[in-house]
Image 1 (tube, rainbow, N blue to C red):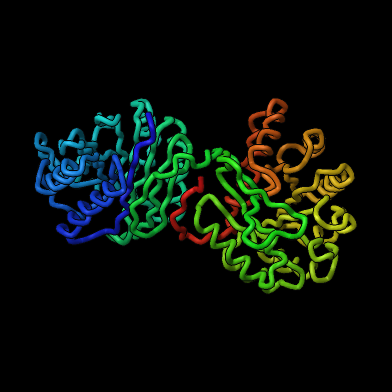
Image 2 (spheres, helix red, strand yellow):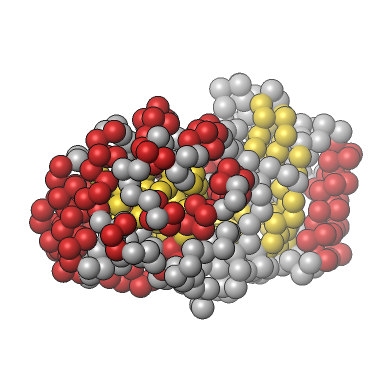
Length: 497
């Protein structure tokens, strides 16, 4: 089954019923004008509509526009009266291209305030259309694992999660579920939320379209018509965290080459962003804010703050603004790690206790600045900050020194990019899998090159060790720390082809 031309209409709650209906019809027209085969309307797109048997004037308006424009319309929750049991229900509808309502899905799980008023559905069913099987998960049903297993067994071509997150945590979790579910069923999954204030709650949006593990398109908190117009989007490697994703917004340091992506490659589910050129920017604070803004575009990303000598105040401001940690490369300024301007940064780092990423080992600078052992005094000053050394393994003496540091300082971790396989095996023997974290090296190499190298280690590892290296340790350090703060707003992103 090919990817449908699908449009998700992320709409703000509208109290006036007639205005809400007119807006829904207009959204379907906009979807058709952009070539959509399927238009998805969100949860509560009609607000608190009258409880009536269907078809009624509201559903007839949707049927007319679907028939006129020749596309399928899938809706989130509307309030209906069952014509047989005479009980109130919440249902999602599927309207065929000819205007026929070919199926409905009753909501199963309710909030405590809803339970006295609505009859729950008995389970999940697949609604058959000319395009394929469609499953709708309404509200809390979208989070229910038992209902997901029911949906999965139906082998749908499209799953609509018509649910509305209220917090950043809920939104991120739902989006991650949608991507992973699309991989599990090898089909398309969309998230269709309402936004704005409704029934005493604020809803944050976050519409999303995923196909076979690929994140095709994602929205923020504004009304939007979201289209799945990028079938070549990168495959998300679920469960993998990349701790060294280099995003070169500033000019790269001399001698540090950046490589444009030559083809669509897989990428990590979660990324920690840095920009080595920011360490040479005239305004380090502004360069750091640009990186933070970039991370706000994707809930799977975190940004690190550039930490430059004599710039402790700028580092403090960026950490206050939500940077997940910081990154250093004093050799770019021809400074040693024990220089007073570098050591002055440790008081800020110690106060925030967030992760510190350090570039060491061979790079574009004289080797006398790159020795890992030079960091011993610095590490002793921040014993409660997780420290990750990256790009350390191209030459044997440097990797040996990094291993010595890791033995001496229990809060040190070693990143895998640019490290030969034999040195990684030695590190596993000496330190164990929990002290190694995966990184792509950012612009130094494509994700796939480093990923394939790591997969060569997989036969030597237990499932738990593999999980530690590829993502769990990094998630513990960066994404699950209670001290890491991340702004909740992000904008629409589209993956470049």
